[in-house]
Length: 170
Image (cartoon, rainbow, N blue to C red; front, side, top):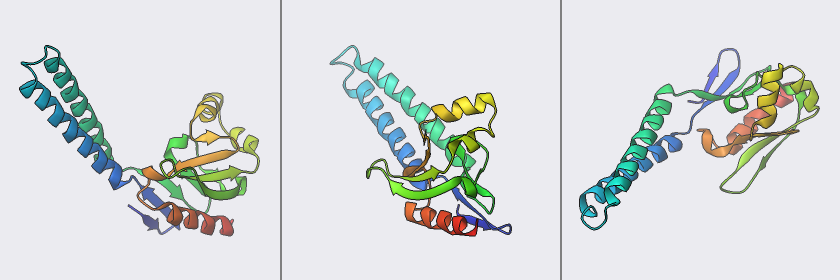
């Protein structure tokens, strides 16, 4: 769900590939679990237990995937004020605090890397509890904030270009 609102705001939703991967994993675990219970039960006493564990895991993953797909939540918002990413768990970060943007990481862990000019200015706006959570966040390695590629429905290049366009306007 890439949308631009009348207030010149760009929003990016959750990746459809993530949802499809969740459903695929659900089906695979269910199939293996049923196979263990049905075909391997006579050969091993533990096959039924393993099959039931796989079915339980399949149900849990299926439920979480379904819930996330139904929310169709917005993960990233860019506007004239700044950038907000859901998994950072902080309010909007103003463009004036961001010095640089780069694509980084390996092919499996590709991400957009935003470099903060003075991280203390961003941290000082948070209360004590949010500050502690922000500093422990795996996507935050000050002065760098990461946006993982696999979570967004848009390509990294498209998101990077949008961010650069908003940074030019700051």
